[in-house]
Image 1 (cartoon, one colour):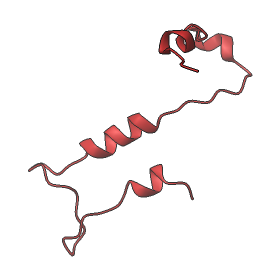
Image 2 (cartoon, rainbow, N blue to C red; image 1 turned 90 degrees about the vertical axis):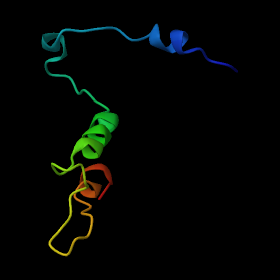
Image 3 (cartoon, rainbow, N blue to C red; image 1 turned 120 degrees about the vertical axis):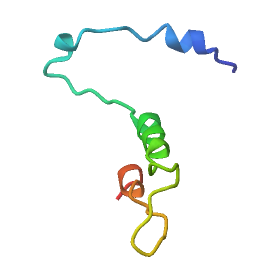
Length: 66
């Protein structure tokens, strides 16, 4: 029951945005959001912190389900 990525990719097609008008479209942006959250740092490269010096968890609400 081995599936090759090429076999799965063969089912995907590129579309112009206008061809999707009026349709429901799902976009998985989880990897992009994760990379953004990893990249957001202070100027010195440290993670963002609050007034108490604790690392903020500002991104947890973006990625985690509510």
